[in-house]
Image (cartoon, rainbow, N blue to C red; front, side, top):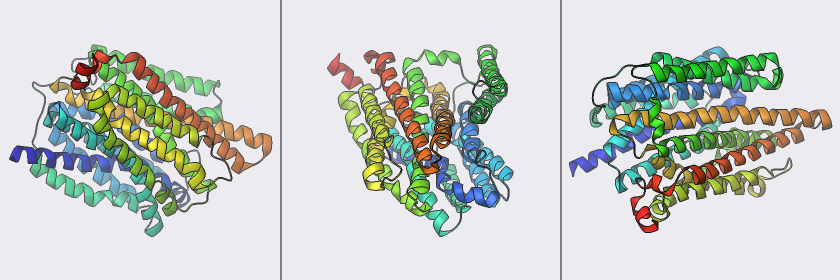
Length: 476
């Protein structure tokens, strides 16, 4: 009995820390206009408040997962919580744009230690079966719902206190989580010893940062300009160097053979695409409600409260449906619903209203995302050797963060190009901005649809037998 109780206490603690990490990826969105004014950010540089966090988060997740396997999952988890909390304090104390971007990057590094360690703690604490499905259902709801709650909490804190409090709020949560985790979570690590692939971590992170920078600057440089092409070449060279290092080094950051696990490979590819659409949805919907509908930060946060409800309901339904129809089918259904919601959002007008034009799309999209995250987590982490739990967890979280950063950069560039063209043609800035949002939402819907197609084509029924064996027996 004691063992069962400890397992669920462990789940609560690691999910609390993960909630703090995921929430921070979006809590900043509603505060961006205030931060821009207070710290004199240019419009072009403002997105680095988000991307400096997500890129360091995504770039070092693999190293965090490797460290968790070698040094101990509890130890790395605690180190990440402490670093994340300290960086949050520094963010709130920042007095310049450069300081904030640098401290956000440090915060992303802390998150890169927390997330893979937390997920690998879950997958090594709960054996494959109903209990792991329940545990990952909670994890999936946290991953999907944290972003929506971040928008609400950010609006409340900015309106009632100041933007600094979107960072200060993490400090007491981190302290409590660290103290309780040190006492209650059991230590575990992979068998044997290993090495740290620092060169791999540096090349993949630098390559991703240069790639995002190239995409962001393509609007001003031009897609075919020498600067854009040179940046793209540097990014590809760094990412190519990463693959070369991983194939040659002893104790690589990513053992490339792990991608022979079809469920892991397909699950991460799909998540990479879907995360781009999801992050962009939050970003552009926030700009629409504040810039076009005229909502205050608090009103904007409240506007996304139904999104949280949709995700929670979708996650709960997914836990019921996975044993009935299988993880593969459940994931595809979730993506189809999410794509439908984004297509509704792509029709938002410049003179629209929240209830008629925004809410239906948000609800359908969020319900679909709730249905998506539970089974995709099962698919991407099942069938992996116990010693690779940290690596698999790191890959899963990397796909989400890197996909979000790349998706936001690409869709922002598409939206900006459309907005610029419409301004030149009509001179109407508000109308042009909405035209840009429509393009971004349409592109996000396409990403969701492509993800559904890839799952249907690349993942076979027998590949998911370990995820939902009961379903396979029924349908085989």
